[in-house]
Image 1 (cartoon, rainbow, N blue to C red):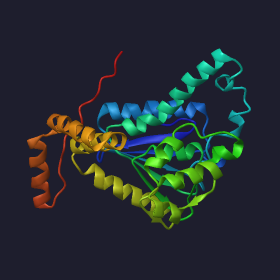
Image 2 (image 1 turned 180 degrees about the vertical axis):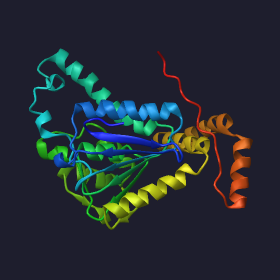
Image 3 (image 1 turned 120 degrees about the horizontal axis):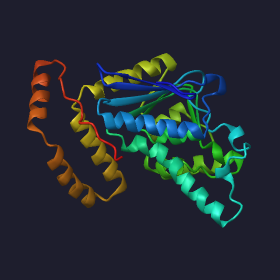
Length: 279
């Protein structure tokens, strides 16, 4: 599948989906239509149940240079906060925009973000919503919004402090400094730094393959437990785990996994059951 911002493909043999930003001539900048397209496509993958992991990557020199600046000068109705009614509408529209990246957090599969070059503004909002980030040696991460006189508002300020030390997140938010690849690795924003884009994409694909080989039921349960623990205290998270495990514990799944592990061969797992959206 393709649109003006990205191409999306699913390999049914492996369960690995790839979403590739494909506007290198515009530094993979985004516009409002991007958010809805991302939300709808990722939600569809999650609902269908065939995807076991999603890799988000890009083309060209930079991963994503954020929101195209011409959006702010376009007279977009959402940006009009001239009176109380318009401000209330602005709040609702912004929350819907935020929800477009929430879908990455809520998807039933892990999301790997492979960053090359600049990961700026909305690009950082996108990367922060993913489960795992890896990058090339030339990558850098920037809360760009502070440079244009606004606070970042699509998730970076809420998610970064749960990924990196609070002081690092605050310095990025207040200064808009570029956090380079090695520094990003040191503070835990990324899991690995690769020499170049080719090595980055190969590494992301290998990581995706390792995840896709595991039980999708166990992976989905693990993601749900980790997300809950991130946002709740230990006692609440343990209580949630007792309910979650009672729902997903499957001796047949374990028998399949153990037999494959003993025989040193790939296991064959059924996909997740599809979710039927409400009409």
